[in-house]
Image 1 (tube, helix red, strand yellow):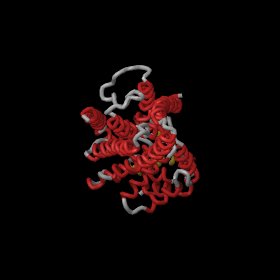
Image 2 (cartoon, one colour; image 1 turned 90 degrees about the horizontal axis):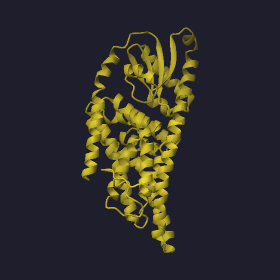
Image 3 (cartoon, rainbow over the protein chains, first blue to last red; image 1 turned 180 degrees about the vertical axis):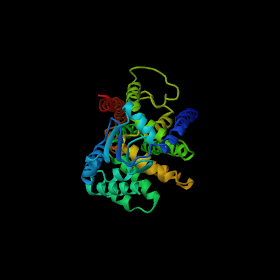
Image 4 (cartoon, rainbow over the protein chains, first blue to last red; image 1 turned 135 degrees about the vertical axis):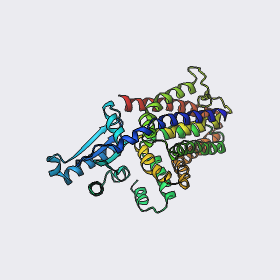
Length: 140
Length: 232
């Protein structure tokens, strides 16, 4: 039992260390440049499950179908970012992303629809609805 | 899965949501490999079905310790971004070599003593007193190895519900019970089935020894499988 208590204590210590180093990063999020551009981000890791792949495919398709004109004019865009890629660190830190996330961003506004995205990963119509309402909320 | 999603969408009570999220984690193909290993590990004492059942409960307790521990740390203000990135990014990657090491040590090919992990690597045929302790450790470790899907269910859905108020801190325990439940049921069924056949032929000791060997090989095979899908 002592060994388990020791293991749990070490784990707690490690978690506190990594979590405390992140407190400063959240402040950066508030300083995100004010922009009118709407970006739908999908963050993921290199290893992905079938649901994760479906989230990206359907979210991308939904954005492209809903906002074809605005994508052409450069006002809206969809970006899939691999968190295992070192280059993604800056944007992930800036947006406060720590894992797989589906996020609608406009300026300082961030609408996190990861839960809805994953629940409706294979239901394209519902995915479209969720993205549409998140974009509308970001535009308010 | 669709049935569970429907319950989730219509659920008014967070306890039901936590339960459904746990079941979705347990039956999704994503953590299936670790679940199979856990079933093998828990049911390795087929001679004693009661022990298998208690092992299952202890494994679930181990999972509850991990899930609640992370939730408590996040509740007290730790950065969700960093904790989530650490576990979702590293959990599965570290699991693969760990499983191979445990498997090799269980087979007894190499004899190395790791402080704190001696119970997990108890050699085959040896009935260590650390059996329950090793099962608890396995529960703690396997829960920390978040795969892409379970990571989202836990960090993106359960955690926001849990840390919204102190009253929600029991939810990870409900989630852990649901993630452990199918494993416990299968382990007990296997122990019951093999135990019955074994005692019928009076060879239960042989069955147990072979089951332990199979479990050790299972650890190695699943570790290799994870390395292939993660790094190759």
